[in-house]
Image 1 (tube, rainbow, N blue to C red):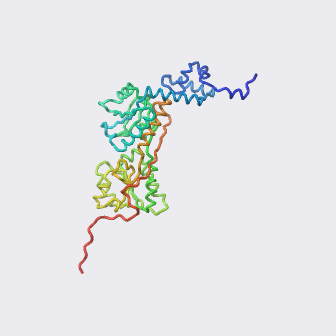
Image 2: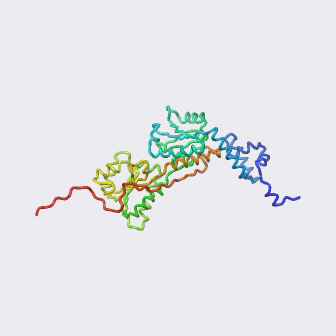
Image 3: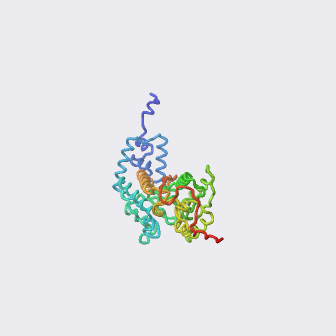
Length: 366
């Protein structure tokens, strides 16, 4: 009797069918479909091709059960997740307020998922990348969260194929890893939205050159867009990109030349530079921080929610571990966390002209 369409669709292709066609065990087929490195890449590709030809699709109920068993196995065998920093000193990054907030969020989410998060300094005891890789493997660590690196363009040659990896930035050498970042472009536009409501028309942007480069100049791009697309008369102020040296002098010269009403900043020493110019914040000049966590106390500006970034990094890493996906990804996925506005004490309520503190003029005698 000829097979009817109903008969065809009533039969679900199983792992057993794929295994028979591939002449492998069901266990081997299962490993191949999960990209397990235990099998040669050629075998994995062949099994996937056969599964596609047969129309194999996992049974949702069985997949849920397998995922549960996989979680239990991951927790038992690979329960430690490494938070790797690669700075010149062990605590150079972890002592930043934003880093502490990121670690708190990541630690809490890791605990909820059954992992233990441990900070690992890549240069401990002068270890080379190859030795550090062996240490991680010997400790059974398979999941890594990479902290922002001191030099984002410097290669870090770990044995990446042995680890599932998520990064806390999208640095050039690590562009093929899933990454969690602040939404820098959106955060800058949020600053402009708040400043427009208060009537400011001369808004300056001052950012450290190294940070601007690290984040692909998204702040400058958003600032340029905001100045050129406004329903109010905007007086453009050139962006100030600062070196790491002599920032106070550079900021003072820029303020004196351009006289902004308010400055959006991601730099050091702005308050000191304004004070040296005889300007009071916020009475004479406003200040909006692009990262209030690492800025002066009670700054007005963007809360980047680094704790949410930490938790999200663990969620993404957990997903990679469940699917046994290691090494660079063929297509990386980036998750941006939107900042929110924090009303601090460094921005006035309106566009008052910039004033300089000077002694009152002497009266002329008649």
